[in-house]
Length: 140
Image 1: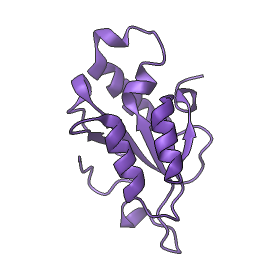
Image 2: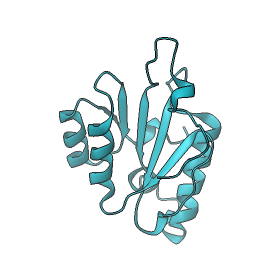
Image 3: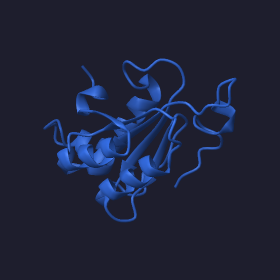
Image 4: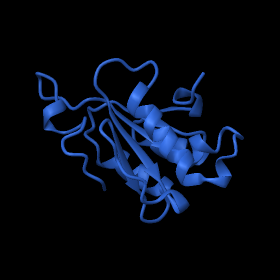
């Protein structure tokens, strides 16, 4: 897990009641692969562009502070975190890592998982997360 030196989601970002901000977990491989724009020629670069867009623009439709976690796997492992987006390289399956993140989050914390993967959607909704497709974070 990368540390960006106190990004959103740390104690500094808690609201006055001490609640953590909503957690948005993005399935990088699924989102990048949802648009046939040549991403397969440079998977790492495609993930870095997604990360940078999320850092600059946030998550459309979400107001206020959110903690964004971009989960990467395969050729995209090692992409660095930036302020506003924590990048986590899954040690194995990206799907399993995202399920672990949802399972480890506070039960009263709103969680959104961005993916089109049907099985992953089923697994995280069973744990109480909301789901949205890749369009939730892709440019319009």
